[in-house]
Amino acid sequence: TDGRGIFKVYSPEMGSKIRRYHYLLEELRLAIASQNFHLSFQPIVHVEDCAIDYFEALIRWHHPIEGLIPPAEFIPIAEESNLILELGDWILLESCRQMSAWHNAGMKKVKISVNVSGIQLKHRPIAKWVEQTLEKTGLPASSLMLEITESTLITASEEIIEQLEACRRAGVTIAIDDFGTGFSSLSTLADLPIDVIKIDKLFITQASQNQKYHKILNSISELGNQLGLKIVAEGVEQAEQFELVKSMGIRCVQGYLVSRPETSHNVGTKVLKGNVN
Ligand code: C2E
Ligand code: CA
Ligand code: CA
Ligand code: CA
Image (cartoon, rainbow, N blue to C red; front, side, top):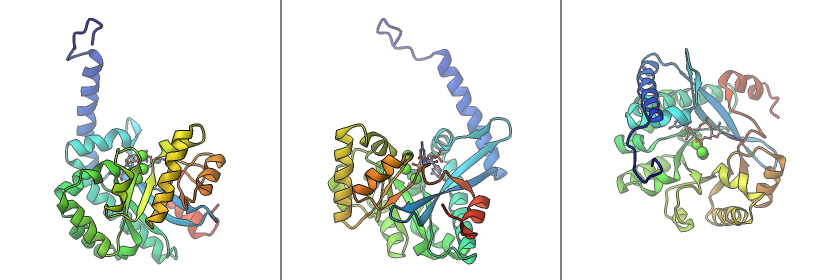
């Protein structure tokens, strides 16, 4: 409001935001047509020995003028415009292709995890799409994980839940992403078709300073373990946070403390040549 209780529908900043939006939308179309993206890979490791459990594939867009544009800025635009459908096809195909190549090079037990947007779930029968991509790339279903955010899962239709069940029956792992931010109750965990809980970074950051977050983190961990779900702590940046989540019975961590997302080339040299930290 303008301070007098009058709601302004337009402001100069809004104008520049709208311009930026349309600019990025057009640039996104061009980038998709010319496949101007690449994937980076961040390891998720076991707390006991830091052995790699899986890699999360994270998209990167290097714009010729703007430089690196963060996914937090362009993924929402891709979702609103449905461009995420085409982009998402490329992300899954490229993720499976890369993991299949790493398998053939000896990295046998490691899985690849791919972020799937709610828009993709709404527009595609996901089970068939996943099956066809696995076939095309020769990756076993047991080596693929799909990450779906809590807010998408709790509002998903019955058809979508059935599709995810079909993926699980085929051997694909399903993770609930950004858990704790979607306002579902802990009891919904028991009803969702999931194998893995990824606890949002917010809880990891807050737990060491704030008793409430500490307690919530502890209950998520306890319940998750009782339900036989694998729990991953996201965004672990400090040794103190690592020790805290480990002491709570959380088995896997992801974060800058262990490794930043890396190019496929760097993953190849570090992991396949054996000098994993
Ligand atoms: P996300 O799925 O929660 O992915 C984790 C994000 O946290 C990544 O950011 C990762 O680089 C970052 N991260 C990992 N460890 C740390 C840490 O210790 N500290 C901090 N501060 N950050 C950490 P990124 O790559 O910028 O991606 C942001 C979001 O964009 C993702 O959040 C996801 O929602 C979306 N996104 C990224 N790649 C894809 C994709 O291929 N498809 C879809 N649909 N969404 C994607
Ligand atoms: Ca994710
Ligand atoms: Ca996440
Ligand atoms: Ca997140």
